[in-house]
Length: 160
Image 1 (spheres, rainbow, N blue to C red):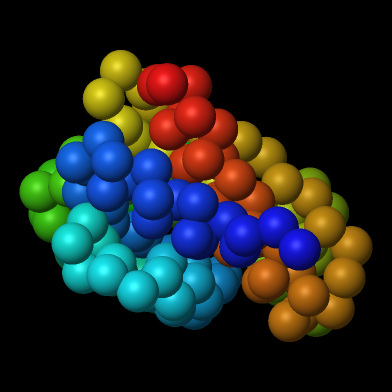
Image 2: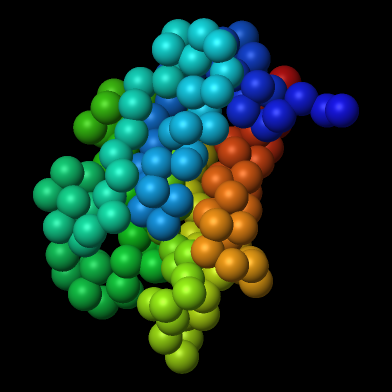
């Protein structure tokens, strides 16, 4: 059985002496929970924000209200600003973000249930990826957290 992604992430962050923060919306703390499953995660994980409400995205993470109004909370633009905000507020080398629609409600004609945007801000990188899942609420949350961890690992493994 292979090692959980959060363990590999922990090893790589420790080896590279990088700190990590998160900003999550639709995962409701699951991403931070996964990261802290690794023993010794306090050496690199600074913390995070569960920015479920737009006011938290705006007031804590600095996502501009005009951006939220124009693109909506579930957008690549907001995901990137959430990651930037987590990095800035928590003084982290690297920050991850996730914002999406876990379901069963909340969908719009252009934003279906299972849609999320995951972001990363790290030395030399600012990137957002679109993630589309088709599970029930809990399965979508798990998949979104997994995809976000994978995005971080792809970056860290590229530093080798």
